[in-house]
Image 1 (spheres, rainbow, N blue to C red):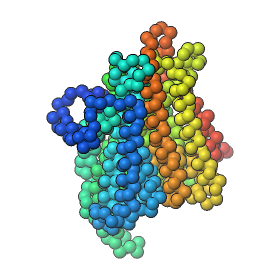
Image 2 (cartoon, rainbow, N blue to C red; image 1 turned 135 degrees about the horizontal axis):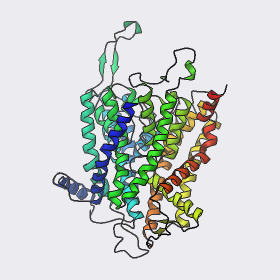
Image 3 (cartoon, rainbow, N blue to C red; image 1 turned 90 degrees about the vertical axis):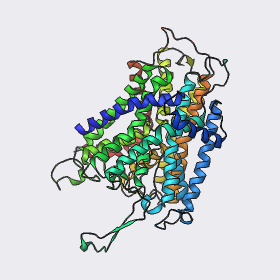
Image 4 (tube, helix red, strand yellow; image 1 turned 60 degrees about the vertical axis):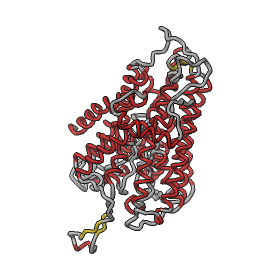
Length: 570
């Protein structure tokens, strides 16, 4: 438990100054680092033919986001299909089948990193670096740019002091936001973490696979091929960018990705440090310090409740080993060197964010912990992914303001701007879209014969399918392994789920923010709803829990909740 407390405390301590730095970067404040970064940024703006002083409305910002994603997605798809014809392929890895390449491109484009392949065997070095790592660097910063634009809109835009009522507002420049965040924040952090992991023994080379002679000759294996590569750089970006996709199929359970206790601690802290920093960015970025306290309080409450349940669950014995071994924690599917606590901590934070990397197999979690990780992804606003987690939280914030306004008989207002029917309909659509997508595809996969490919009968088999679609929609990428997912059905339906879980969930809130920004701001009075209070924070938690439970409790009862109830029955 001391290890858990230490990792969380250090993460919060590091995230605080990083959040203040994020605010300065997004506000364009002058910095001593301008001498290094400003010339590079100017060169990028010139290549893109972008005027960094030109602001964008929500439509312009959304269009730039979609355009950049379309170009990157097609590029990655082609690289994966034709990698056998491209350089940096010392192990002669063949090209991917079109549907698998499409799923892989969309998965990394949406900051999900759901893998229906095994990276060390099915991707060349060029695909891993140019295709995968490039997307792992850019897509989280794109999400953070959307979050920054939405926050600007909620407070009237950058031109709030001069714009007329009803006039489209300046929400920032997409290209400037993404460029500055990538160069000034993400790449330096990735470099530092990659160097630290290399020092711990994570491979960092462009040489081909290594061969070794097994110690135990009775295994009947004359030699073993060990894939290596520039692993440290990818692990750094996968952790810091809430990406999660590993160089190796088993992810950070593999000693080559996660070799030491210090590497394990660094990788866990890397999962949460930028999502935490985004919370601490709110105060200096918006000028409302108490908003940080509200968001941190709600997220921390949900996080600690989730983590506590996961830790408790994994300290219980696995029912499958009852009577076969000495009583103890659930160690099935875990690296013994990390133990039950270290594995439960990682499982909790990787699903509270949209990271999805693992240092243990989630399919082997006890049912209570399995329920916890599913709920984390269904909520998808407990820290959440970089940028998209804050956007999801703001959606819950707006819904809570609307519900609280109805309860007390006041017109719902967001920082002095009225939240009206048009905005509430858009926000409600997002709630319905999530349920329709996840539950709809889960039902189809279970009803159509021989489609699901689940490896377990009964309730856990249902949970495997539900988890896969939940993970895809939440842009998480983890899985209840054992699912035969490298098929046309899974690649194509999961691709649709990935797209629906990313683009409407970012564009629609941005649209709502753009609509609110145009409205007249009314002065706050004693009769205004105070959203920066403990009472409203408790209301938000209740709204989040009720929306999630009402939508998904029946499905959970058919899966992990049902398994837990069966274990509890005499």
